[in-house]
Image (cartoon, rainbow, N blue to C red):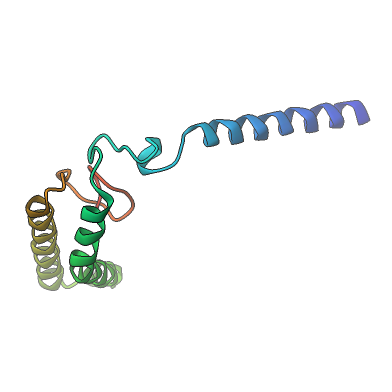
Length: 123
């Protein structure tokens, strides 16, 4: 019995170590590319910092609208007109952020997502 438990512990430890090594090998930066995201390429950090600073109010407003939208959806009887207005405002903000990215010389992916950069950066 002790040998079986010890063997299982050793196997579990091996899996944990292998997972840690695989995670560490992924690298840092955007999507594991070590800071050289294939969508953004090598954008000058100053340019990216200026873009983020300039678009901070837009991104904050977008997140606020997203929270309001989630609250509207969570209601027992959703107000579809209010939901539509929030979605249109979010689309306007997303388009404005993409326009500013283009004007700043920063490449952008089509759809945006708040969890990551590039395609899927801000939704």
